[in-house]
Every structure is written in C-alpha cells, then in structure tokens.
Image 1 (cartoon, rainbow, N blue to C red):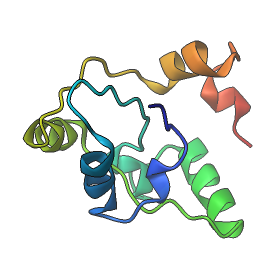
Image 2 (image 1 turned 60 degrees about the horizontal axis):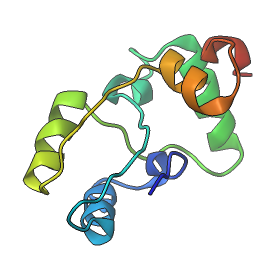
Image 3 (image 1 turned 45 degrees about the vertical axis):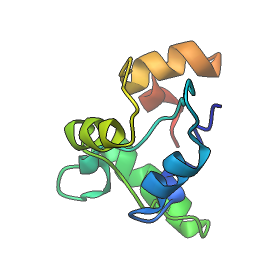
Length: 107
C-alpha cells in the first residue's frame, strides 16, 4: 500500500490507528510525513511556511508531523520496521518524476 498524500491531514493519534488498522503480517507501508519542525513557525523552512499557509488557506491545514526517532519507536511497537528514510530531495527524484529540488517547485 502506498499513501503519501493523506498522513499530514490526520490529527494526533489517527495515524497510529490507521497504521494498525491497515497492517497485516508481511505488509509494507510507504508514506511521507512532515518532520516535527515543519509545523513550528520558529523552526520551519521558508518554503514549508509558505506551503502550510497555502494549504491552510485552501481549507486543508496540516494537522500532524513526526519526529523520526519517535516514529521509529511507535512503528516498532506496532510490529513494523523502517527500512528506509528519504529526505525531500530523494522523494522528489524517486516518486514525482520531477528532477527539480522541492524548494524550486513549491509556490
């Protein structure tokens, strides 16, 4: 299963429940997520601040983010393991078909 578009819109706790509900032995789950700093205006990159404002204006604000270490622990408790972490540049190259940097594509 691959869902790299909805996770940012789950409220706290919903992501863990959704992962448990859709996970079966042998499952692989692919998703991207916002880093914990992405929703903190004091720490977020300028492009992330712009993107957050844009989706909020459209009525779909980001509701969740993760600390990668905390995510590892929570997934482990659900019997899942992280096989690979990709940064935004690598996600862009691998899955979008665009070769530009994400910062060049946003707003």
